Amino acid sequence: MKITRKPAASGASRRARQNAQSAFVGKKLFFVSILSIMLIVPFMINAADTVVIESPIGPTTFGELIGTIANMLQVVAIAIGVVMIIIAGIQYMTSVGNEEKAKKARQTITYSLIGVAIVSMAKFIVDLVQEILKKK
Image (tube, rainbow, N blue to C red):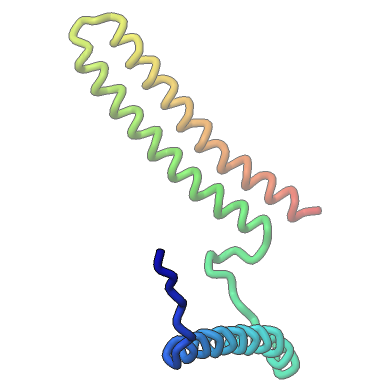
């Protein structure tokens, strides 16, 4: 049985270990510097002048935000309703005398029209609520 000894740390491995330690210290220093800047700069800006950032989506009040969201949802819902009516129309045309498929297509058309009507009325309801809230 042969016993081998580990060689003593060479100069190259010692330098590699020192480089790793100095890199770690450098990362810590970088992190502390960035953190310090993040904490100090807001106070410097606030002391110099007030920064005003405008809303990128437009509305500045909660009521306007609700109105904007309602408008977006209304457009999406109406588009979905139109697509459903088109799909139901295709189903009706391809039913070819099958009464069950034709009945299902007519129901889909009816429900889609009801959905589009409700979504259209929702806009008026939101406007009414906004007007009531503005008066108070």
